[in-house]
Length: 135
Image (cartoon, rainbow, N blue to C red; front, side, top):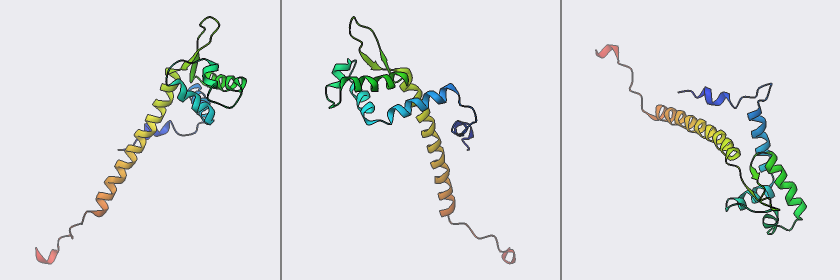
């Protein structure tokens, strides 16, 4: 079984859709270890910039810049709560990445399935063709 439909989404195209550029921004945001650590902190729930900055040895403005990148990529959301602006993970942004990664995972499962079938075929002893003299 070929999985060309799933794999066609991986092929480069001359024009990039909004979905692809959003994925690019999300993965680019995750390229930074500080931003990944901030997302990990947010798995425990909402937090303010000051709460998120506490474990780091960088300034609060630097943390704010990292949070702006994560927000622009759609990975976090901020809400207004009086003078506070707590951050939280964005389900939609994470879901889009998860769906794309699941598609890659399914393609890998199909590829390994085909490889398994080929290995069985190659290692199964073939019976010799019938000898016409002994029929």
